[in-house]
Length: 439
Image (tube, rainbow, N blue to C red; front, side, top):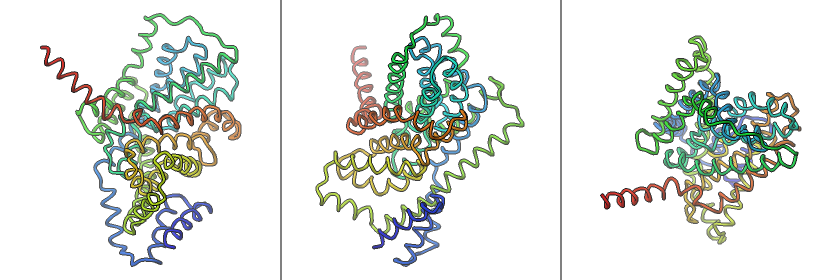
């Protein structure tokens, strides 16, 4: 009865328009007051201790870095570089937009920021090249969702803190799935353009490509700094966030000269507001997660699943259906913090790696970003193009189906997520030993 009351209250509050973060905290406190002897002071201390975490400091750092870079010419430089590399192919402009979204996602770590930055530059160009408007916006809205999968990703940090997993491992685990989904979207754009009758053009010379690379070099270098620094053990993900923020400011202010000193205050203020929103969600989700754990609800659900003899394959089907539905109605960080305490114990009991589960959750949230009624990328894409929400949704559906196919592949082939963070280092160590044995 207590569990039913908790979830009925939670979804009832959300249905009447209460913000998710408030609904999480209110439903938990009301249920606790009715069914348990709630220690309000202990609950407050638990939330404070949960937020007073070194790892969470990475969130404002990466948000600030993305804000610095999205305000200037970094997006345009990345787009020019993408055009130089793949722009000659049939469907070159849409493919360039997807490639640019992948790169900018690795720079900003934000899905909506990626849609705004790349969409503002590429939507008009794709449409002017003769592509249907819906085709152009479908490309931007969908590929922008890669921003929460390709590291650095704020949602990965939220999952890592909730599931008590290494943020570095999660970041590295998102690389291959992110590249794979990006390549699937580019393949879809390639064959779609051929079907529409578009042909390839003459590739740019090496000199022209190198010029585009040189202009985008300082923006691209941030990817090497973050991924290389974490993977090479030079700094932790939190330290990477700090380095990323300082580097993004230096590039935007001193090298590209995109921002003035007077702009810095507003950029920091906007980043602080975004961070506050995320941390408020995390704080209330911690109340929710603490109550679930304290009342052994995850353990009870895990035991029910195991007693029902549900296989890992069937469990993952249930997980994907649940997350796809929740992702349509809630913000990604909220979904992750609500479902992780419930799903993680079951996944571990069934032999599913926590990092693999994290990647599955994030890919589901990608699809949620482009499905109504709360799909944020749809609203952002509608705002920058002037198209109706319905037109953006219809345009995004075929692309979203491509990501859904990728989700199925990632779900049932764990090596796609786990090879790079866990198996590759061992292969690299064996190779070093082999070379050392020769010399």
